[in-house]
Image (cartoon, rainbow, N blue to C red):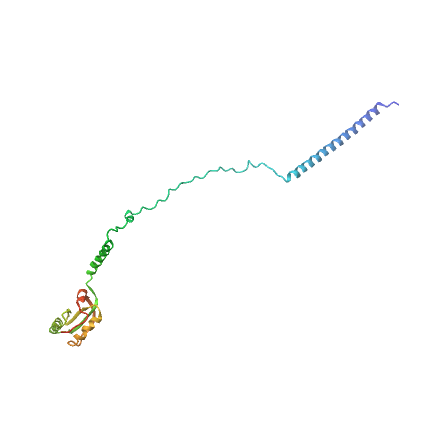
Length: 209
């Protein structure tokens, strides 16, 4: 059997076309398989590394330089200087040490008291009138009958007033009042400023002559 050359070329071309189709199908199947395999490998890699995620973050972490703190040594507190005289013991060899200090204080008080001459007290007023002779008579009566009492005559025109005594306490003045009223019945006790020294010379009990 003799095949015509033209038919041989046609059959050959058909075979070639089928081979090309098979090659294309094979390539497509190979390519698809590679895609599937690569996808499965990525999934397995993700699933295997999902529980342990590791990433180098050292490049983005902030860095701090440690500076060691310096310790400042404060000066030790010094005790205040004490007066050396305060530490000196009292001279116990002087038995009158305290007495001398007390005497100094008393002397100071005595000087202050000497400057005080008058205090609030009482006097007996025995005469009030316009006649000078009667005022002089009342003054003479006190000198004679009560020498420890001092008479005081004041004049405010046209009135004379005669007061006697320097009493620190009203009770002392009352003792003399009863005796003076025997001569001057209108005598009364009045509050007044009295001389301290003279008040000390007044006898607490009055005796008539």
